[in-house]
Length: 265
Image (cartoon, rainbow, N blue to C red; front, side, top):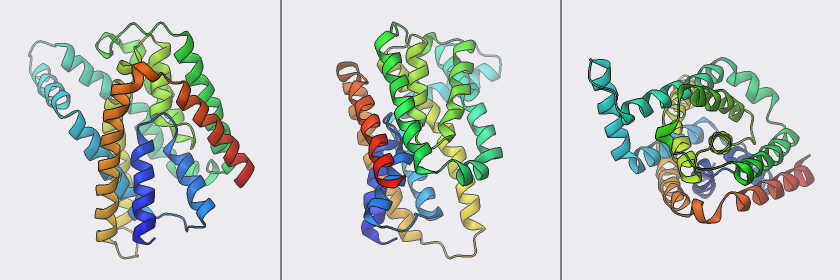
């Protein structure tokens, strides 16, 4: 990959990682449309680092409060809403992390076909529209309970299917469970922290055990571009989501799926 490809794909990854529109669908479509080679492990590690930096920076105050309260609760301190939310993030992350570590290889080999990506984009996009249209949207992320978190966590496993969108499926379940749009998005983004970290660790291990040399400048470039674009995406999405709703993203997902079917299948 040359620098232009790294910049454009990292920008695309950063902008789509936290929107409910599937970053994997874009990373399947765009390189094939432009005739680019498949991006490698260095790129995967770079964009994971960038995305993790972005979400940690944006939620730095919340993450600090959650970590302090969680540690305090472990050593006999009184539990509060921050420590409880930290537990919910941990519990909600476990299903996707466990399944991802066990099945990432088979998933990459069998589920990256363009028609699967396209149908996932369309199908889960329509599910997002249904949740946004019919859910009551009255609860905050601090009103979640263990049952809610287990449901969201188990459905997050579906994000391992390319085209589903991790943020898309978790926001969808959050809406179905009565969260406001902003609360569903915020909880989805908090769930992303351990998921992205675990995925980044796995990809990093694979990268350093390869015989090919690591392009450190390529990694840094991809990470910086991904981090900046992802941070901007989180900021503006959370500011606008209550006003614009999910319909624009649903329409985009359906159109994206149709284009993938028409061009790549």
